[in-house]
Image 1 (cartoon, helix red, strand yellow):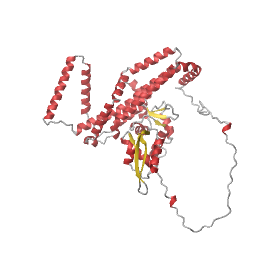
Image 2: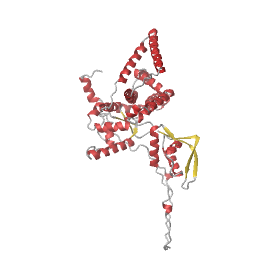
Image 3: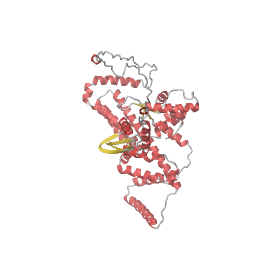
Image 4: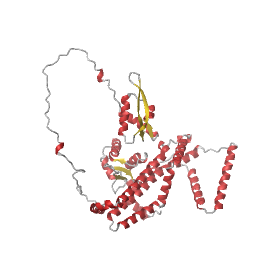
Amino acid sequence: MSLDYATLDTLRRSHPAWRLLLADHAPLVASFLQRVFVLPNVRGMAQAELVSKLEDELFHLRQSQGDTAFPKPAATYLEDWTQETRGWLRKYYPPGSDEAHFDLTPATEKAIAWLENLTQRAFVGTESRLMTVFELLRQMVEGSDANPEARIRELEKRKAEIDAEIARIHDGELALLDETALKDRFQQVSATARELLADFREVEQNFRTLDRSTRERIALWEGSKGGLLESIFGERDAIADSDQGKSFRAFWDFLMSPERQEELSALLKAVFELQAVRALQPDARLKRVHYDWLEAGEHTQRTVSLLSQQLRRFLDDQVWLENRRIMEIIHHIEAHALALREDIPKDTAFMEIDDVAPGIELPMERPLFSVSVKPVLTDQILADDDGDVTADALFDHVVVDKARLAAQLRHALQTRQQIMLEELLAEFPMEHGLAELVAYLTLASEDSKALFDEANYDIVRWLDGNGVKRSASLPRMIFNR
């Protein structure tokens, strides 16, 4: 792409990544969004949780920078970052939820990646990248050569090289990579893994753009339904058959293979045990980066599924006929909303509703009158008999700290995808017996990701306050990340 003056001037005025780099609070925006979204690979966060995290960030910054450094509330900053004039965050409502969620835009992730490259690296490797260039060029030449004889000659050449290497190993000549070469290759693996996560967010954004254009076309369509469907399906097939669509489908099929997942896990585990890699102090999340790829890919697949659901609802002829008048009204509202999208009225009372749901009060639900009971007070005062009354019962209550148990659970899940209660208790033995076991059951019932396997039972054992061995049999409890 040619970076002429007109192109750069347009990017400076319209691209969210450039606007972020020019923003007054760019250090706050970039550092906070990288820590909350990029590093942990979070693909969506509820508004209440994100506001809480930003409030903590602003509290610490105000202590060091002064109270006037960031005067606005956290919620105001988040709303500002989602505006069309910023474009750094995407605000949306997941299906079945009435709470707003936020996610990074691809432009913001690109700006953060560019800022990361500005920091000075202790080691910059070039050998592995040069070898990657040669390997890619070789694959391109071999993969496009339709001459069978040439392909056979190349394979015979590689076979001879492999046989020669096997012979050298038999003779005791074992060539190993030195620490510099290992560090070089590991840095390239780490950078490529992070770039793949960023690519997933951009692919997901492209599908969301397709979904948005489809909805706009349905809202503004005035021709026949058959013509609209032909246009929509033609565009969707073109995207699925494009270079990006084919590459994503091939990547997803490759990653979904159980054998490939096991191979990746084994390779990453072996690499992280190398002394040269440990010297780099790598991010521990890279050890499970293939699971982050799966999670990011599932978000993309869900976006495609939502688009398909929208088209299926439109194809439902019965619903179309029964609610035709309602659909016309909705389309009319959508058309006006699209017309006002670029020029939103400034009046705060642009649209008001009394409530989100009607309030229903049935007369028969009112309680009947009941006579209040008057307390009977005695006029006799018992004198103290000066006897010693023990107060030990007031202090013998067992208090289980659920916050401590939840922290132990989070710590255990940092290095694994899931953990059973039996494994968790092996790492953190119970200190308060049955009361602590009940607290774990409460945490599992409140966690939407926790599972109870009633087909399998586990035995939990502990010592009570008198040193007596106790045990309990309960369905297998599995906590997930």
